[in-house]
Amino acid sequence: MAASSSTRYTRLKTDDEEPSSSAFEEIIMKQEQIIRDQDEDLVLVGKSVNTLKHMSYKIGDELDQQAVMLDDLGQEMDTVDAKLDNVMKKLRN
Figure 1 (cartoon, rainbow, N blue to C red):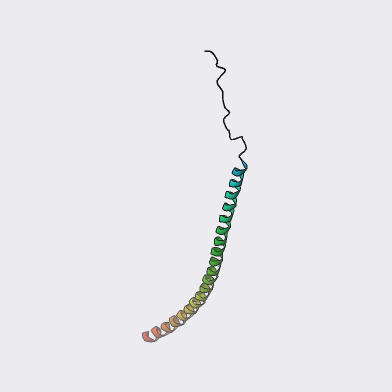
Figure 2: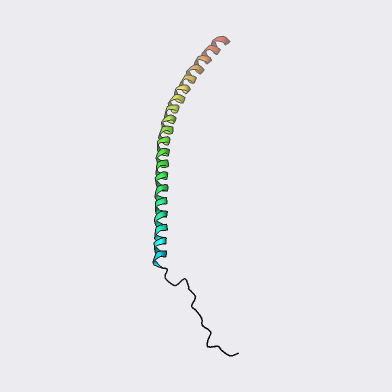
């Protein structure tokens, strides 16, 4: 097979070649948009965390109040139980 000298080959573009400046600008713009989106998301997360913090304080306060109420109820139950025992003893006699 004879080699033809008229055949021309062109070089294929590879990933090793540097992208154009417009490609760099596009990449930078996309990265900046991603950063802006992340900043917005972080603001929302911060607001949510702040809301959860306040809710947890309120829940803690409510639990403290209910603990006091339960202690009071327990003391009242002990008093009523003692009185009921006395009444039952009197009824047996």
